[in-house]
Amino acid sequence: MSTQSTQTQCTSQAAPNLIFPCSDASDVGGLSDRAARQMTLDLTGKMYCLAGIGGRVEVILANAQAAAKVLVLDGCRGECARKTMALAGLRGFAHLQMERDLGFKKGATRVTAFRICQIADRGAELLAGLLLRRFLTSRTP
Image (cartoon, rainbow, N blue to C red):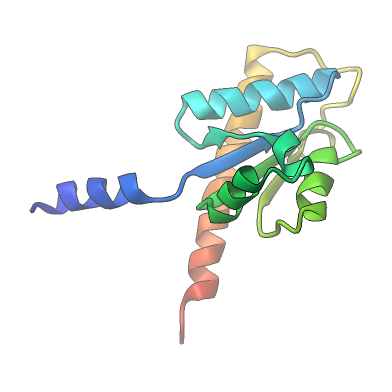
């Protein structure tokens, strides 16, 4: 078997990257939701159900725990998505908060294609950084 086909086979067996957006009724929540959908289209990860985490749906919790990497997207300073994950006992995820990290203020930020791409790009960077941290911390001297 060639190296390329072995790599493809191993990659297809890997757990997915999951993306949990705040889908709040505000502008920044809308951005979070749309960015997660864009990241799914870009194959960066798979948008997943934050309400299922809050509702303690067993299969959703199990899939979140088994994910290769997890990104949590919060629209505002309330950080409902991050808090929902923490209350469910989930740790070790990357977190992007729109106001703190990108300067998008709730109630004053239009939902645009450019902003959606900004969030999706930053989210992809955070997931890549999470992979690097896991690699660096798992190495033995």
